[in-house]
Image 1: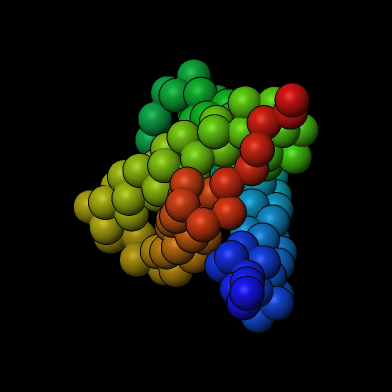
Image 2: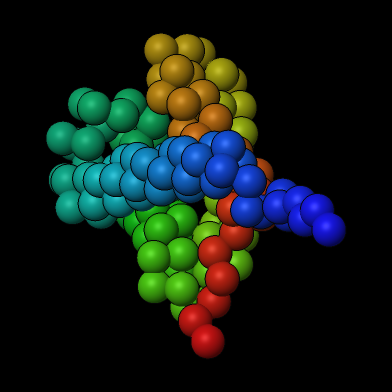
Length: 146
């Protein structure tokens, strides 16, 4: 009686699955790093100094700029901590979706202001966030702690 390996057990699938999981962790780490650093910058830098780096920040109320910093930090932490701790890991998928939406809105905002040089960073973050969304939702979800 011949027995075939299930798709989850084929050696070639395991190695490509491992590469995908590694790629997802790298993407999650990069998104987390950029979002947390951007958020901390928006939270801690005086507005005059911040507006020299990000001109839009000098044209909005300080509370709004600081709120965006908090949103950035939440996104950075949310894309990695639930998966890393395996506590409510589906929140990583939700956060990745929110990061995709945030980048689309940021891109529209920057285009409306003629800030085209900022778009490549937004595009990279959009792509990485979409990759995490797709990967963690469909191909390599993280199982919650049991």
